[in-house]
Length: 228
Image 1 (tube, rainbow, N blue to C red):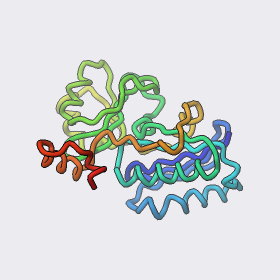
Image 2 (cartoon, rainbow, N blue to C red):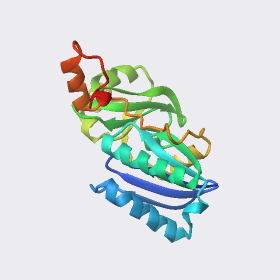
Image 3 (cartoon, rainbow, N blue to C red):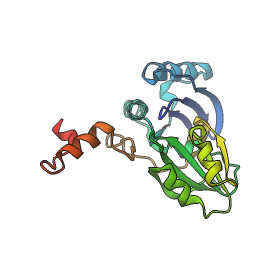
Image 4 (cartoon, helix red, strand yellow):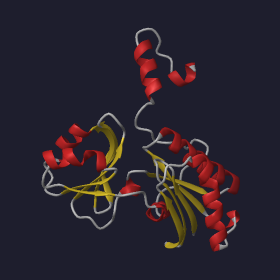
């Protein structure tokens, strides 16, 4: 099976080509660039570097969320277009799962900074999810995991190190970026999705929608998206 895996859910752009579980090539860009202009050239460059044609692909695996609204739309739209055009499988994997190293013992908590001291968080043990991804304040997250004997925070940990060391001095932390290779491996064994209904998993409304709903909650129950 030949797999194209891509993650544009946050600042990092990660793309990998994997065949039968073996990494053929991977590119990870952590500089601030517009994913909408760099994603397809990156895919094209990697495909050419290993001598693959689009028709050689059997499956597209994409980081489905949570994360940046713009980044998720770019990644999911690209994945859907390729899967539909080529008539191949489409698989969505949690963006948080793509941040989890497989060799860390205990509870691993991947986090993505959602601003205002809130995060998107996952909960993993031995590489497997033990609780659904969620959006919550970092204070609430610290309270939720404090009973675990060993906790390691991974992902976008830098803004929260001071709070981690103050509240959970025994906890570990490790900054990680998405692994498109691991995304592909997880996607090889995951269930496929129907292409047309496939959507990002945001976990949180955009701020404009939240403000609109707050202003209109007493007078209009109609969907923000539908109204616009």
